[in-house]
Image (cartoon, rainbow, N blue to C red; front, side, top):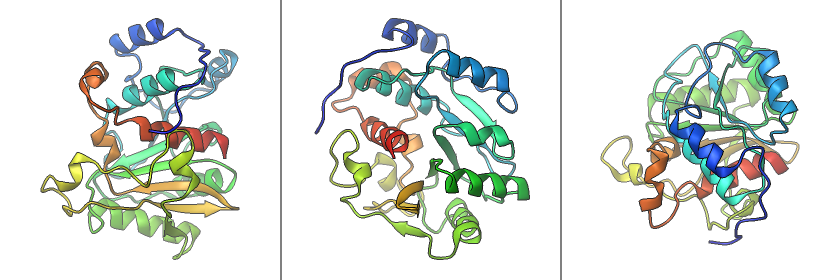
Length: 249
């Protein structure tokens, strides 16, 4: 499906990376804000990418816990990025999140940002950050969707969140897609039971800063990474596109 793997150079070998995953390191979550020393160590190790999950005070931010391992292994497989195998968890209210190259925010329940969370979210996006937001309910009328969209309208304006055209550069940033891939969760009788043929986003200065999905990609990719070899097609390839877009735009 489009562009193939590129020449690889890694901070860790694939064997070492998989060994870390087998030990559960990549799925481990740091308790509390990311310490400055830890981030400095990551930069010093020469990592090009580390996965940052945003912890927010409302709702259930701690979902799809195996998903990052799958995405990280795909980045190792297909790209030349030097990947940190450890998932980071950073509180949205903590200014340290402003230094992340990519952030992930998901959940099922209501999203109600505190003043500090709202300030950091806006500052991060307006200053070049990228947040991938996934609605685990896959329900455009659900609690997460309605509350998150209200937060975005409050921060960026009522018309800021728009549907992305299927020729958006996100869909060709690495692999070629004709639009957002469907997920098996969209027609499982839960949520709105619809296949959403679009994603939404907030664009700042001609750059996508917030990518918003009602397709529940997090659950689609939330399986033991060792089972990926049984799939006819690696369903995390679109996640590679998301990361590559975030890093190159």
